[in-house]
Image: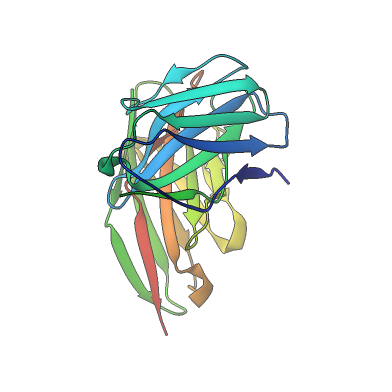
Length: 114
Length: 113
C-alpha cells in the first residue's frame, strides 16, 4: 500500500511565523500535491509538483511556497503565517499519467494560527 | 476546464436504507471521475474511479457509481447503509492529459440507527 506521511497531525503557530509542513511518500510517485480543506469548500489545490525541483501553482497559492528537493518529499511553507491560514492541510501523491491515476492522501495536518 | 457539484452538503439515511450521493460534473474533455471517502481525522481514501471503461463502476465497501454522459452525472450508491459508512464523501474530476483533480464541496453522510 502507498504510504503518505505528514510530519505533524496538529500544529499551533503564531501570526508572522514561518511554518513548514512536511510530506513524504514511499511509492516513488512522480506527482505530489498540497491542498487545504475548509468546511463547505471541499479541497482546494495550493501547489503541485510533477518532478523534483518542479512546481506549479494551484488555485490558491497566495501566501504559500513549496519545495521539492527529493522525489519522495514535498514541503509546504507559509512564509508569514496569518490567522486566515488556519485550516486542515492535506498532502497527496500519484503516479504520472494522463489523469486516470488516483491520488493517495496523508492523514492531514490541522494547523492553527494564533 | 472541469468542475464538480455535489447536491446536498448533508445526507441522512437509516441503517439498511439505500444510500444515494449525487455528483454532477462539467468537463471540456472526456473526464475521469473519482469518489473518495474521509473518515474523521483521516485523509481521503479512494472508493472508486471511472476511466472510460465500464460505465457502472464497483468500488470498496459495497459502493458503486454509474457514469451517465447524457446527464453529466456520477452518482454514488450503496444498497444498504451500515453505521460504519458515516463519513464525508467527495466527488472529483479530471480530464485526459491533466494531472490535477477538481473536488466537489463534499457530502456528509449520517446513518441513523
